[in-house]
Image (cartoon, rainbow, N blue to C red; front, side, top):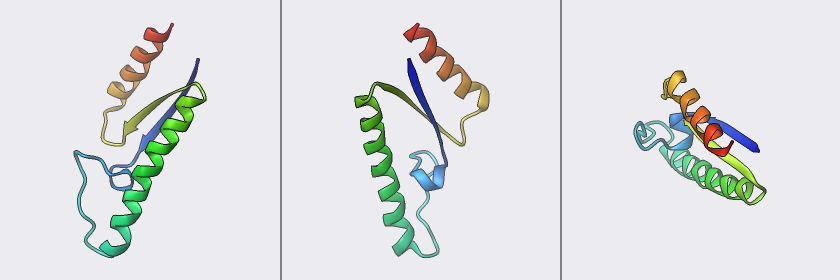
Length: 78
């Protein structure tokens, strides 16, 4: 089993829970973050096509919860 774990920053990857519109340079940051989100989706699809299991963890997730999600996924695949 191949597993790819990403830890995404809320600002940089457009977290639904913590997303805030950029105040400074919004003409740059708005499209930049949208491109990051699209790139993440594209990379997830590519990795899955290659047989990888992709897990994305947000920076705001407690470490124990993130570890629990990874452990559950691994146990389900065993």
